[in-house]
Image (cartoon, rainbow, N blue to C red; front, side):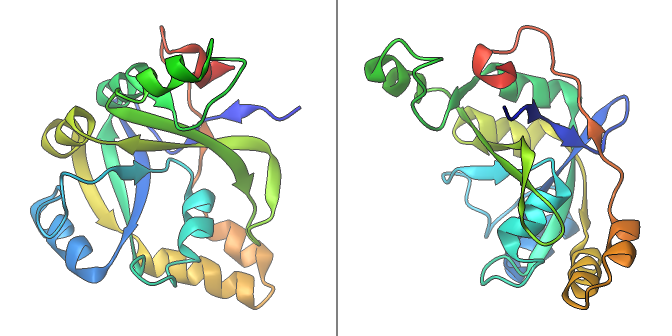
Length: 194
């Protein structure tokens, strides 16, 4: 049985999440310290606490439109708000009493999706990693209140990917950010912890 884990880099006040964008959005965000145009507030934006899941998703910053990877330090209270105000991105009989209840839950400003965590070669692992989609009030709070810092880590992502491509997994592992299981905030919905 697979387990759900929020693995992340965090301290007492912030948790680090990752996003990948084209250069125009990444340059504007790093200059402003938050997301500004051409970032579009009306679109759902997905944040990922796991470095390796971000690496899998963007192909070590090689996929079109995902050439730049940003590490975003987010206020932990804001992150907890996102989890408490989330719905599952898919229907789950163990969570929902029916499809109508699930559809109604999609009105919430945050979506949560659990996918298999990945190793350096993008192979699935036994535990699941969280992806969090923010829309409406969720993205407004994220951009306007929660972001405490943005760092462009594209060079790190390229360096890790380069070592993996050459079969130097020890060197790649040495570059990975330290991540630990993040404590589930109190009063989170059942789909977060089960």
